[in-house]
Amino acid sequence: MKKPCLLVIDDNAINLALIGYLLDSAGWEACPAENGAQALKLLAERSDFAAILCDIQMPVMDGYEFARRVKAQPAWAAVPLVAVTALAMVGDRDRILAAGFNGYVSKPIEPALL
Image (tube, rainbow, N blue to C red):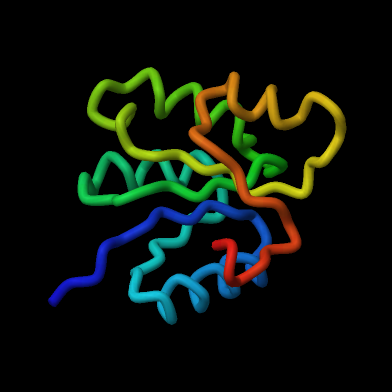
C-alpha cells in the first residue's frame, strides 16, 4: 500500500531529513524541496500531495510568496498548507494565516506535535 505523501519545503538539509524521518515513522512519505521554486515544480509534476509543510524564511522564494502562488492556483488551493517556522514574534501567527497557511508548527519541531 502506498503511503500518503506530504510535500516538505525547507532550505536546511538537516530540517528536511528530520521532518522526513518523523513523517516516515508516522506512516507518511515526505517529498522534499529545498525552496519554494523547486516545490512549485514538484506540484506541477504531481497532484497527490496530502498536505504541504513549508518553511517561511528561505532564499530563492520565501514561504509567504510560495503560499500566495499555491493559493492562487485552483488545482492546489485546497491542499492543506502548514508553515514550519521559528517565527514567534507578536503578529507572526496572524501574518502566516493571512498569507494563506492553514496552520503552523513551531521550530524546533516537537515530534509528537508534527
